[in-house]
Length: 176
Image (cartoon, rainbow, N blue to C red):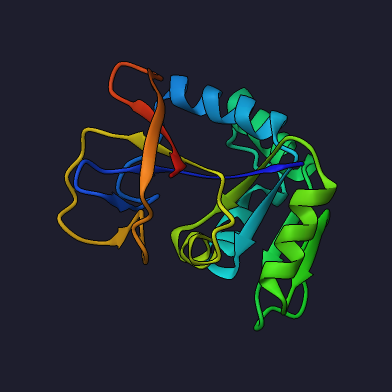
């Protein structure tokens, strides 16, 4: 059975914002390895549209960006949206029955399936479908924005903590 994992970069005050702070080279290498090892990713519309940036190589990219782009393009993607009518390669659109589709993905797969984006994670948390939460805690205070937990605050148990680079700690939680 596959495990559904929601992991994102987060500020000290609990917000996610891909424009406010980005990964160091060490953390980016970590994310490349994560992407290579994932069984796939589930995206909401907004996060999928942001990530479509990785669909094509860009001339200004270095080796790390090319490696991440290749890993992202290589993995299966499921996109939850009622408004999108078409999606890119290696992706499947989920327009209805979110719970049933995700339960089928988990039951029929192995490995980790990433949940991308706090809005989608909120829906999946409400349904009790997320198996693990990974918070990549950055030493940044934003003061406002989109919270990591956009909805219900599940009861969690800390399973692991590790330093990813000199400034970022990964906290791994499971629902209680």
